[in-house]
Length: 451
Image 1: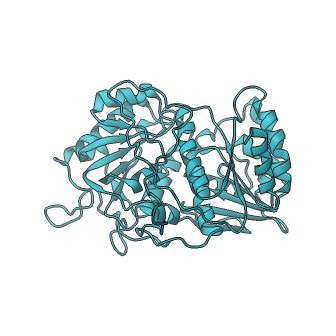
Image 2: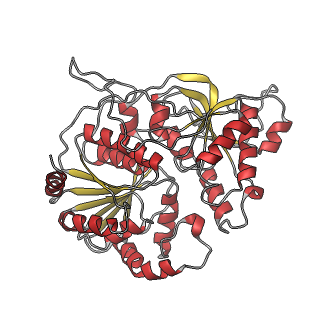
Image 3: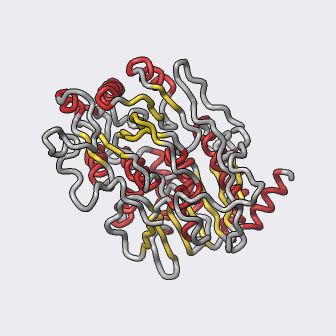
């Protein structure tokens, strides 16, 4: 099939149907979760393998990504290349076309291509757009999407802060809009929408708008109005984030990662701990030297062996982490929720404040894996960090459900040898890492989320 024929087929598929725009692997994963919940009904219960035809293999390998990941110096490792299980195609009651507005980062592109294979395996149309492939690429992309945008009955987006998405929202006539998670930024989006503020990413707030911001402001304002319920225009937020209150008229639907749990796992659990990386250094929030020292102390205190890198972490930073900490650095080819669910995964997952402290307990519900989070010390912040950075990051940790909160790295080093954050102290009292953090019924992390 030619590219032109494929695009014509995809455009036809969106007539009166659903058009979803994604720019990251996590957004694509959450569109699949939304489709599983909203469009298809229930699949097999978590931890039960889906019913397959007798001769259908569950380990059929996928095509390799067209864009190879960035070469990393030894001893960095890009492991976890085991094949994905082939999903059973189901006939959705309504057509869904996934439009990938492809970024330029090789690691993100590689993960997106792997996720596209899963989406096609679920029976959805996938349209890959080289949306940033040169000066004229945005004009070609927007021109080619204008027709499908006007015909679509429902629009699903993963990043309301994206200028690309805001521009596309100014074209659509759809009266049914859905926002799926792009991480913890969803919480900021909800609060800004409720206050009627302009849409600005949390780590950029506090500064004066630049020249490009001023030029784009009319488009951003129109997008915000599109995302505000009015008359027959409906807005839904599909999220695994803790959203206590939403603007009037906005429907909030919980994402329990039911599709992920139905399709993958349960994982094999190892005895050690794994550490999850963050891109806070790359976004200019956290100082590099402080971050490396915190990772080294955290790994030493809890006996971590692997460091799962965020897709936006630089090769230079990861090389330094590998040399300075001795950790095996792994660059996953799928979102961490799927990597963890497939396994093998450590019995304890250590993280700094990030999206995974909210999503991993849901994806790993029903297993014995525990998620522990370390707060960002104010002394780690850079001089250029947004004034709201500390408050936002503290809120990410404080609102996380089913996780253990760790004491500061300094406090942990003074406590002596590594200790399981979920185990009681020798005196029978909760350890310093968990004391006062696990009030309520059960220990949280073993609680099964609703499917």
